[in-house]
Image (cartoon, rainbow, N blue to C red; front, top):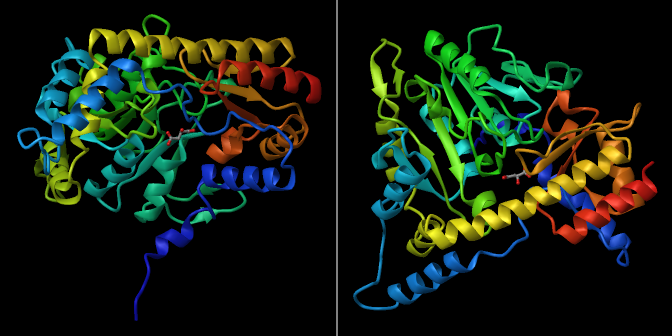
Length: 409
Ligand code: MLT
């Protein structure tokens, strides 16, 4: 008899963004003449910038030559990319290239990292949260059963974030082993100050816990004193893995490139209390299960650090942040209470009183033909909220706001 991994049956029926995509395509099928504006999944719309494109073209030509052809590359990424990441993103933070693991996405890294943790690890997530952190732990059997009434898994520690605590999670009240933090936050678009993040680093040190810090949106930080990397906090190199991505920064959602930073000063423990290097474990896992990101894509990622590349990418980020402002200001002037959108491409709004997040989703789709993401899809404390992304075009961002003003208030 072939048995399945029954943990999968413990998942909610479908991945949040797949559910939304299905609802939208059903709607479009029934209403082919409606122009639907999609501000749901955080997918970028600006094309790859010229400096990056040029590097890609050159790399394509190079692998077409006898001399330049590349077969399997190093699983952890080519040295040229690991080096440029270390010297640019971690300048002054003392991260070396062998602490950087290039991958095909932060989503994959966040999902795969759980391979190296004990099945009984106690997991803490913020609520609402990017669903990948939770679902991958459900798949791995760490979640316990789903409590339908409360909308939570019994073995997961939820750290609520809402307007009531200014979107700053409290430290776990019980001892946990793994804490997922994403800042600038997906989905709320809010940030943590250094002193707030430091509390988590101190907690992790005291409790021999690990922080998985998702910094996929750091390039959108506009305000001073907001940490771009967790390693800006003293002691974080002993307790944190950081994930970054070229997806939102350089428009690589389709090209695929990201990286994880696993410091050599970071250790886990065996049941006998022996220290084990997580850098070594992750390296072992990576070399076994992954054959690396393609050479062409890594050359493209490298070009994001060239002077021209940086300049062009900065313009794109500004474009999305301008959209965020259009959406944020527009919603505020329409009377909505709005969060995020200043250091982040996500705008988190409160749905009108008495409405549920999915009701707002349905109404927004059918009346205004605008797609967003219901807050409750990110966790029970997301109920009553709704997320819009600034990754659309400027024209669509403006039109979406006009339609919301016309149809939703
Ligand atoms: C989102 O919309 O939350 C993100 O685009 C999902 C992702 O990065 O995988």
